[in-house]
Image (cartoon, rainbow, N blue to C red):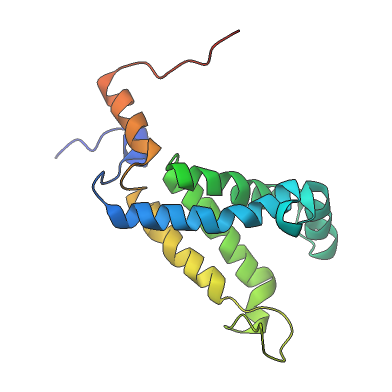
Length: 167
């Protein structure tokens, strides 16, 4: 039986030559970042952290810890995907947020976004696309140029990771 390495090795592993994973990772991160920034920072017309927490907990009935994880997952998860840092965890976070969004508010409106239709609310087609990008990243890692590759190489070589300066 061959040695598969530690759990951390498997978590960081990916195909360094896989361009499609790079594209999926960066596109998903770039698309998700503005949504996270709306919720966390109030950018792009969003309500910011306090407003979003209030909406999630009071209007939607989402427990505070889950609402917090949604905001953090969309914000920092998107940045992590762009960098390829903790790709599997970041993709899992985005996928969980998308599944939650489908079942908490979009499924009842059907498939289509309904931008020009008479139906109120938006369907789940966007969320399905985000899930389709996230799942391969959870399974295969971040691909080409992922920061996970750098971390994995440092860990396997036994070289210490860079330390933060104490100035």
